[in-house]
Amino acid sequence: MRKLQRRFASVNEKARTVTATSAAALNPRSGRSLARAAAAIVILVSFWEIGSRFNELAGVPLPMIGQIPAPSRVIVAWYNLLDDPGYWRSWYLSFLRVAAGFSAAMIVGIPFGLVLALSRTFYLTAFPTFEVLRPIPPLAWVPAAILFWPTQELSIAFITFLGAFYTIVINVVGGARGIDARYVQSAYSMGATSWNIFRRIVLPATLPSIMVGAAVGMGITWEVVVAAEMISGGGSTLGRGGSGSGGGLGFFIWNSYTGGSYEQIIVGMISIGIAGFVSSSIIRYVGKVATPWMNVR
Amino acid sequence: MGAPADNQPCRSLRGAIRIEDAVKIYENDDGGLVAVDHCSFNCAAGEITMVVGPSGCGKTTLLNAIAGFHSLTSGTIYLDDELLCGPEKLQAKPGPDRIVVFQNGALFPWKTNIENVVFGPVAQGAMLPADARDKARSMLAGAGLAGIEDEYPGQISSGMRRRVEIVRALINDPKVLLLDEPYRALDALTKSVMHEALLQTCYRSRVTVFFITHDLEEAIFLGDQIEIMTSRPCRTKKRLKVDLPHPRDHTIVTSRRFRELMDETIDAVHEEAAKAFRLGEREG
Image (cartoon, rainbow over all chains, first blue to last red; front, side, top):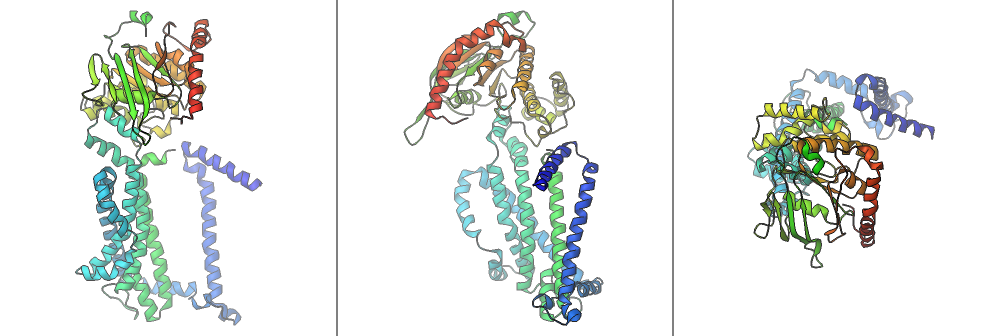
């Protein structure tokens, strides 16, 4: 009970300090939470290490976790990969595919969503088709994409594009339709032209939703690109280690599995985790800079 | 602002609104809902006309017709003898001569306060951005709002937001200010400060004010003329000239005349409120 009260008190306190904002006021708190986050990782890794080495330590193989390479072995495998150009090429290729698919989704999705939201005729014409296509998982497109696009690279980028596209469009439509009519009315009464209203009212009012769509879409592109690489064979193969790294991080994982280097599977997984985290951070940062009014309350 | 204010130096008065036989019927499944029923009244130029009625009675429909946001079903509205809307043209064109200040405020949250204020003149191409900023800065300072220019509306109090919004309207030099319960969400103390500030603004700019409210005390304190409306359909139930002298401040609320005016009108307002309550009108 007291703990709950304290939690509410700290929420209030936070609300108060945010306006006066000072990193200093929040610092001791964020220092402590950093320590907690680090502790969580250390505990997880320790359990994992003990679990997978249980056979060596106690002579009893544990089910499931006993099959997974221990973190210490993973780190060694990772260290050995650091000077492998194929491993880095996988990073590069996956990032490139995500960037291509994601940018294409933004470039096509934002205007498409805006027109859907602003034109009733276009909405009634195009939205039903869109809604029928939307439930088709991007991965179901893989075979058709391979047939349709001339290169494998394009088919992977296309599937990545689909992953982000629907989310971005849905968010843009929701954002643009949710614009408070008063903003548009008062802009009209202050003498704004339609173009002015689009540029100065509709776009900025939709921007927060665009950023939400971008953040969610970025997450989906990583999911999709990995799966697409696994299925399609990942394009080029370079590098060493018998595991043919170099076809993107998804392909890297799959190849490590078929090549029997189980440590590398984990390396690939963690690499994707890091890559996704970095991409999301970039989107979050861009969103923060693009919508400065959202962080003031 | 009635006779007493006329000895102040001022520009020629403008912004007289004449509403003649306005009717608005909203189409719905039961054939139609009459929101405004043959409503006629005048708002004198440079005066504050308070339109009082229970929530949802159709006052806002009238305001929207003047602003040009909605059409009338029939009837005519003139602004300074110039036709805003009539049988030939049922919806007026919105324009910077009639600016609305909304119930919950409509400052653009993505623009800083000063960017909000310069929006009108810049959008119309009436002023260079730099000149507009200078003028906005001095108008904000004149309204006691210096120092908040570069903050976002989300960073200042709701009372201040409302004042910024009125400055944003006035920078366009409108003939009429259309206020739709702008102080509804404010607490009573902030409200009384806002009322005095609005009167000061009106004394300075001599703009005509069309002010919608359901608060009778607010209406008598601010108004030169009060139109008490019937609950839906909306038409004038009682008209009242407020003869309280200008300039007014908060002390007037306790004066004998103020109380007399309250006594004269409160029954009419209460009757309509009770009617609206029985009909189960939604807030709005």
